[in-house]
Image 1: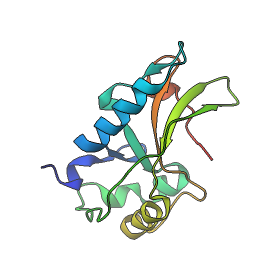
Image 2: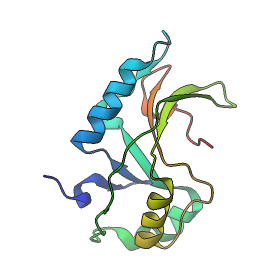
Image 3: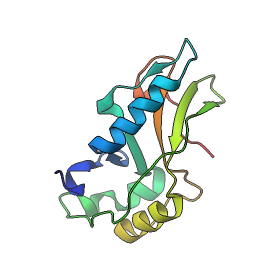
Length: 138
């Protein structure tokens, strides 16, 4: 069993990769998308962005190598939704059901959150590349 530390990635964003159970849920959802020009994201690219932008840039340096507290709740997902970005991008995503719990968790580990962030997993887009998904959902 992997620990949360193995799932949190400190990069240009703070993200959480999915555990095996969550990955299976998302892979099942990916198969439910029937739109022909949508390609699923690779398993290695599935993640939940916890914090990004200026809020993350201000605190990022404090978290390199730091032990972060474990999540004490299960994460489950809503059914996939389609979104079109203003730049012509189209993607599918699944919101996590535990929005408030995740917001409270992020605030407890780093002290800040992205105002209005909807925690979700991008599951597919027109290219299958993670960077081509609509980044922010509301």
